Image 1: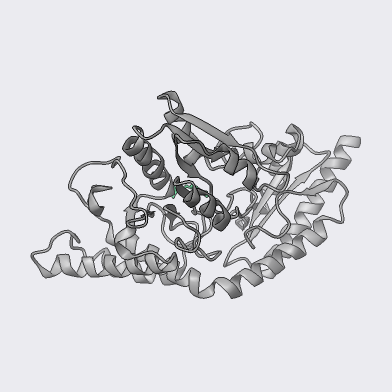
Image 2: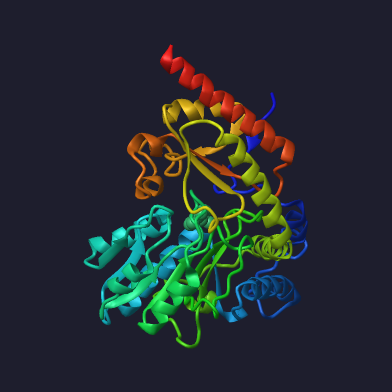
Length: 386
Ligand SMILES: *Cc1c(COP(=O)(O)O)cnc(C)c1O
């Protein structure tokens, strides 16, 4: 049986063979513990970690000491949000974030809310972006953190990071961004954008799962954090636990490749995406979700009128692997909180398709996928009438 065409690159990406090749020696030959400073086994492993750390730091214009390796973006978000909250609660207990964030930001914020912190949940405009005046107006004297994601995992919308960073810096509030979907896809610069904390992950950029990082600014201003995992004191005491060199080396390689190929690949993906939309928009009642241009090149998210969301995904499933507007929170059948936040009604939010086009998606695959999508929509609509 042929497997469906993979178009779910916002959930995870297939790993690049070049990444695997870079990782392999660190499972067997260079198996040392990078914290072992008294012998060559440790040094070899540490050399691999060091290089990856530098690559990742350079990719966001940070310095290597500012990179804290974690198990992924979920852990990085938890460390950033709860770490700042615990370290600064005597200064203030107010945090600002956005309704369309990933659950890995929403849930830690809700947890803090349950402890007595106050959270402002900013709405978004119809195009998925935050209103900057509204953001600026929400900042109070007791605000300690603003957390706004770089690129949305459902609708690909890019938030105006530099403008948000400027507002935060002017008001002396830390700025955290979840850049899980953005690293290796769009340019990121913690200096130019005044970012104080940035969450990253490898498996959305053709790297391995189970590895990510938090960038933690060290100067102008220095960010203090309460560690969430205590133990051996690795990663400047922010995150204890023996480092995982194969994953870290793979992460570094994935970021290196992402950056090197970003521009060319971005253009290719945007072309595939635009062609898909051109075909889909020939149908009536198919709506584009999110900003027309400020979005990830490989993201297309549409809502389809006149069909049932579950039936739509079931119909697509044999031929293409995509997510719907309700699949993100696993088995949940509730409509997506992101599409709902754009002002779409419940049934349009449910009947939405997220196409995540990636490095290994071919033009032929995209054509087949769109053809099948159109056929599925038409036959579901016909069945409904009949
Ligand atoms: C995938 C994703 C996460 C979770 O990252 P993990 O590394 O899987 O923990 C967090 N935020 C966003 C925006 C994501 O897309």
